[in-house]
Length: 98
Length: 290
Image (cartoon, rainbow over all chains, first blue to last red; front, side):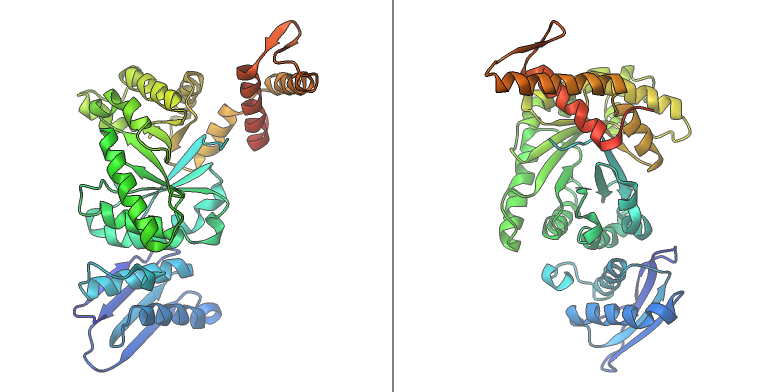
């Protein structure tokens, strides 16, 4: 899936996160994460973000995540929403979102 | 016999509430993708609910999702997401006729087959929100074997009737019609939400009314209402004591091969025994009334 425009998803409320995706043609994937629980869960958050991007076939772009203590399920949902918005995709394979 | 006294509404776009609502222990949790979600957040809410439904913490609790109507740009995508995610019950808003339920059922079955889910495992409920829906309540209630219940939704209904919420007089006919349709179809009936959180006395008065009418339960908009509702539906100690004696007399009668037994000179037959069992189920779920 190709990110063709800047897009946001989520909020900065507690237990949520804000995800911003931007296009980056051919420059690879850059994931930047900040979190209130970075020390304890930073590696796990990054893994969930990267796994989610990988399942969607995102290989290029800048993904900035500002986490406020969200569960993994919210992280997956917000990353997917931002990517689908940024890729301007309306129909997709649901199994890639599981 | 599934207890459905409390059905807690949760806005589908709220990540925090979706992640923690299981702690409140309502009988059913209803994730809302319709009126509680703004138009520009429909896609985000759908994905949040899709993932929340798969959380292990919701396995022990009945999950319901209110989708957008199928004639909107969002309804079909909502349905695709929640059936695939394993929701227990799909709630269809603005149900005006049996055909609305039949269309929903066909679409659910198509998705079940496509994703490998057991056909028939997704249950349905229909919310009746208009004069047409109330008039057609019986055919709606009998429209599908997947239906677990029908619900009256008060706000849209009173708008359609060109009136407003008041002391309940404005809902009298609709409540009776929906309830009779549900009972005739042998499914559950759910009453409207009570939206004034600060008016606890008004809430309890309405709960008392709908309980005496015979509703199974009520849709709730705040976790604070759950314990109040469960307590109001809980039997008294005297009722529990009597129900225990009825069930004991029934077991004894069955042992002796009697169809009907008597307890303190009163006939105990199947409806009385069924009622006693429901009383004991409510007592087991939340104790006796405080």
